[in-house]
Image (tube, rainbow, N blue to C red; front, top):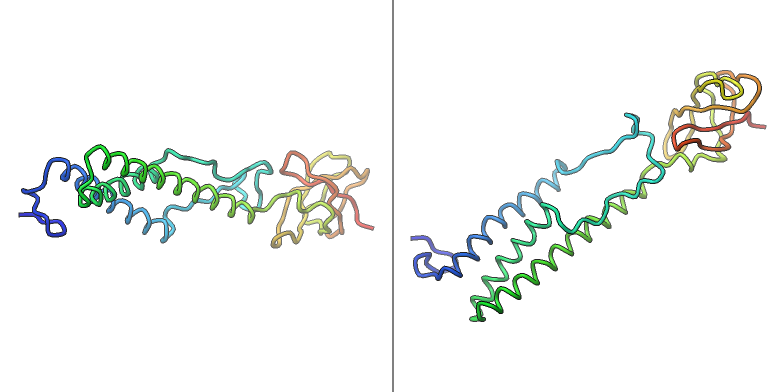
Length: 196
């Protein structure tokens, strides 16, 4: 009744059926996974405190994850098709299992490596507050003197941004003043002084 590449389902051995039952569904899931990744439903943005302009300084991106749903789908896809090829080449059952398992594990390692290095690449585009040190900005909201409170400055750092700031100056720094960033506290607030 059912035929796969010229093979009848009824004439297949249980071992062949096992590999076909793994190869077909996992291949469909793999294709679906790839399509979802390309159309972007797999992506997500991480924001710090609801502000997309800020990033945690010590964030290292995606960790190396060998065991994940994506990697398991890739494993079973390669495992299934490699097993079918080995059966078609008339290899023994144990050799088929060994070769298909090794190929599946190599695919998992490849997928985990790709995801890890893609995470490292996207990390390079993340904005870190430490890059603002030494830059000049304009006070947007008055900054109270002697760190009695925070104000905000506007600064051009990987795009135009409005960021919280404090100062060690004795006097308040009013709106419109030109300031220089001298430090970053707790990875989320700038320390500024009046620019000379």
